[in-house]
Figure (cartoon, each protein chain N blue to C red):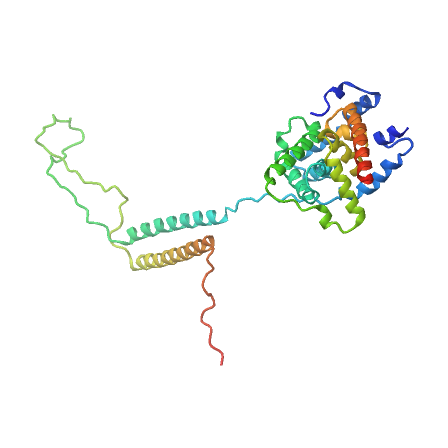
Amino acid sequence: MYATADMLLMTPEAHAAAEQSQETPIEAVLVKAVLSGDRDGFARLYDLYAPLVHGILLSRVPRAEVDDLVQDIFFHAFKKLHTLREAAAFAPWIAMIARNRAVDFHRRARETVEINDDLRGSESHESRANEILELIRSLPEAYRETLVLRLVEGMTGPEIALRTGLTAASVRVNLHRGMKLLREKLGFMEGS
Amino acid sequence: MKDDYLWDKSGQPDPEIRKLEDILGTLRYQPKPLEIPVSRRRNYFPLIAIAASLLLALVAGGVWLRVRNQSAPPPPQEAKVVPTRPKIDDATPEPIRDKSKTTIAVKRPHHKSVPSALTKREREEGLAAKQQLMIALRLTTEKLSLIHRKTQGITPANQIKNQHRVG
């Protein structure tokens, strides 16, 4: 788990996020619908949580692999949905699947040579985005996922907490510390 | 407060964070339809067809054997006649059984008694039924071989026959 000491710090926003998560268990309804045979329910889950899985993967694996892995993860989740004990915990569950899949990817692709995204990037804006993404990936693991979900996928801190299963306090700390480190690295890069 | 913008996008936006959001936003997830392959159900049709054909062949064979037995002349009945004491009167009391005396016993066949002589019409009907069964068996064999070829992935030979050459 990430930043276990920081989990003890609970702000009012954290309490609000926790309460919100208890009030809106839409994933629980959707999971039950899927288990009773409603495939459209899973499409809705996919729409809701694909950005989360995308962000988690983007902070860990090469960008070119992310889209295929997102599909693989949701297909795997569809097959294994009956093993999910608590329907409301779909988001942390699929987030964990995504993290494990990223670990598997690196274990299998250890011997392969990764093609730098810059070689394929056609636009300078995209090339710059890939450079910053590489800097984020060089940060400690606890920060990179939170930063990608915030800066790339556009989620707010409470949303990240709700979907990843982390406490709001942890997310807040990870965002601030990660952003501080990223600023330092960006300053170093621009100065060099 | 700048921290609030990083946390929940409220408050005054931080220009650096806004710039990062603009740049990194190009990498954001682009919605794509989920492709879940439809679960393939195993095709049991060839197995069912083979089982049905075998069953049909068995039934046809059984019927054919039955008809053949009926059309064949029955084996001669052997009646074992042994001397016995003539029956005198029902009212007379039962005499003491003497073991030296014997009674008439007719050996009964296990199957139904079949008339030994069939009429000409019955014979013709039997022969016609036999021919029909032979045709049914032949068709069943053909179908079985066709199913076998299909399951083995062998395309049947050119089925267009009896074509006349043009020119």
